[in-house]
Image 1 (cartoon, rainbow, N blue to C red):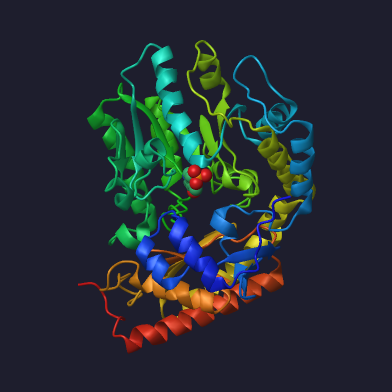
Image 2: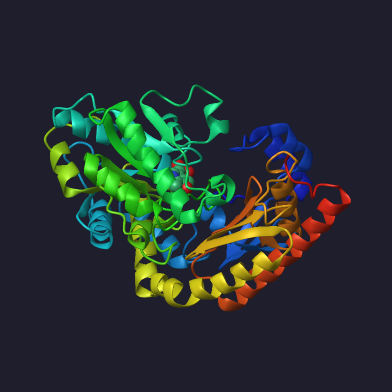
Length: 465
Ligand SMILES: *Cc1c(COP(=O)(O)O)cnc(C)c1O
């Protein structure tokens, strides 16, 4: 058996990493200079690094380890499936039991008539599928000119050419020829940063109505679909005002355009329901899923499709698919993950116990001098750091300078909390206990204190002009 050994000193591992491993979303030379943290093991909500330091992982990896680390049932499910049937494709009039069983399970869990599953290996791949799927749907319906997909600035839908184009990340679009043609972006419902003097409710309506304006400008017969995350995750856990989603739903219905809910983060209990669409009363035609579907134990994604769209696609050969669409091992792992989420009542416990408790602790951070707003829905939350709460001011320093300082103090305090610009975000494993939530809040407060001290010393508590 090949063992990936871990007897090297950390510095040696870091040197090898710098020499041979290219990291996602990372400045290579900066990382080589600092050295990557080597994570060696994890249990529950706790990570351990190669020097034996422990961290409370308030990010559940990358928003994905919903059931927590160390569940051997998933390892056993993978081993059983690898022994029985490690691989077979689903292309040429073949199928297998794990793909069937997981599709049936997802159809049962998904709301409304979202009854059909197209598998992918990741959220990015699933959103690439969605682009081709909605355009093919309209072409099959005799409206091939309906090819524009409307998305939002500061959305995250993945990092492939298609999904990265759907996303609205300016830094990504600046490299490599994105966005592809036929994608249009409207403003995001980020009241804290962009709401000016409007109330959150007014601002939510204003941003939703940008969709209607875009449809009018582009031509109602040109728009295929609108895609959005129920709550933007990688954009900074931007919780939309209550007025936003009902108005978006009204506009999609009125114009007969398809609605894609990107549930890659919000799905599988993150917001206190199985899907974010249920939390916001959204009726999507397609839901993108990945991340929490397998709690990150194996790479899998997919599109859960409503009957009407699936039936139209059934009328043609949809010339699309991945070698690993419906991979038997990852399907088996996902099924076991869903069994645990369901049988242990984890989603219900989030809704009734853990999320309300976390919300109390999280909202109390608003009393810290550095924190403007706190936002939290279920088990995803954010803090806006600000030099001036009343003015909802941004810092004078480059966006992200303060957030990065805070993230480093979090690590130093034994807490993994991510920064998005100058917002701090959390998305802990859904199984986090009350004691661990107390620890999360204590460490966050400590990191905020250290950040505040440092900003004062360095003259960074200044508002942008
Ligand atoms: C992470 C993410 C994706 C991309 O998923 P990958 O598995 O990284 O390709 C898509 N949409 C949302 C909302 C995400 O958070």
